[in-house]
Length: 352
Image 1: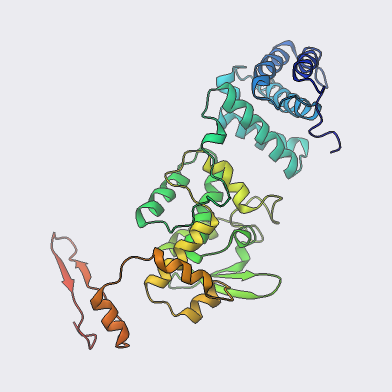
Image 2: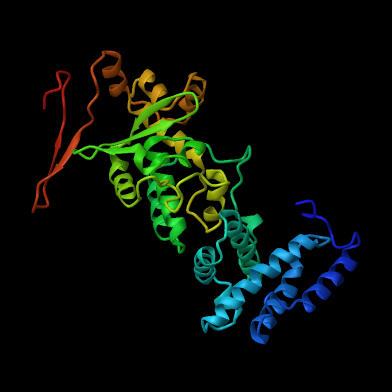
């Protein structure tokens, strides 16, 4: 760690010359065959255009190790040693999944290798620079609630991601965030054993923190998706990372950044998902006491800030609520095997 970020030379041009000499002298351990060695050297030399300035020893060694391992694996399995094939997302993913168990990599090693290959691959294949499209968890992070259309678009986008791990992570992230309103830290800790599914389909999630334990019941329009995700995860494993039994080194927002670089329909993070869940309950009349207990909220200040984001009130609904008469919106029923439908209205006595 003491050498991380240390440049090969204070002068950027001299450091670049030293980096090229380092690449030209690289042989691999054990020594690479000529074809994968040539691929590694040429790819890294071309990647120096996006390396830190002045380039450092640590950056060079991580890049050489990642590219050489990828090229060695591809050559041994008879794959074409072209940049379009080796540096595409699908091939990188297969390599990480193979190398992890085969080499006994830790999660940190897998993450470092994945990020470096992704960075080099995006640059050499001409992808949009990550700085122009990644969402940031800063003051500009999206906090306004998502519309119904935004939620549907995000779900379709998450289900169609090319990397299976990202599909599992993002679908669970959306279902728990929009269905149960969990915070970013809670999203990374919920395990299969923390979820109970009733016979009628209701999904109850037990959330444990150092100070308290609470149970949150998922919204009905998200419970089926969440139930499918839960049933596909082995006992003891985390819902947002079913390949793990313990939370990873990165926060949920940090993990989502990589997926969010894949051109989502709208920007989002755990805060925006939670706000969407809170606004739904506020708009549909969930009592504040129950809502604050379910969200583990000690003060109502945040809820006050969300009031301006709610849709305009309807005079008829407001009048019914002020009379302590629960409002029931009109219900549309479609008659099976026909093109006919019936709209049912309720009066003040809750009669049709």
